[in-house]
Length: 95
Image 1: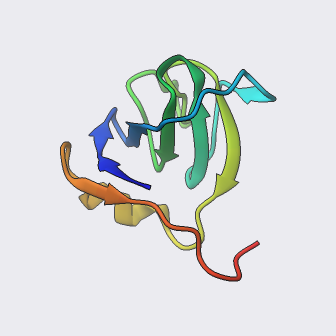
Image 2 (image 1 turned 180 degrees about the horizontal axis):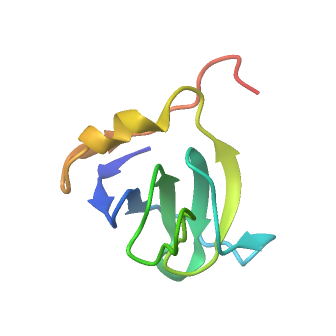
Image 3 (image 1 turned 90 degrees about the vertical axis):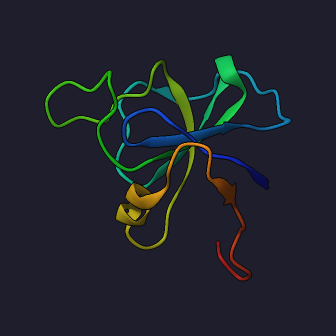
């Protein structure tokens, strides 16, 4: 998938052409979690605090369906600027 990165604190998100219902939603996530945000039909990459975070937690704008986890350090996403092109690929052979 390719898109343009949007930032909300230490979260990158972008709309995707998928519509899914809420499923096992979480209102607090972990660094490196990959989520789907139903209200915005958005793919989310969490790597730190958001404006909704309380204390040390990472909190999306509203609950998300967490469906995966990054391999490697999520810290690399700190370099991504608002409006940057972003491409998400599944690693061949990855589970």
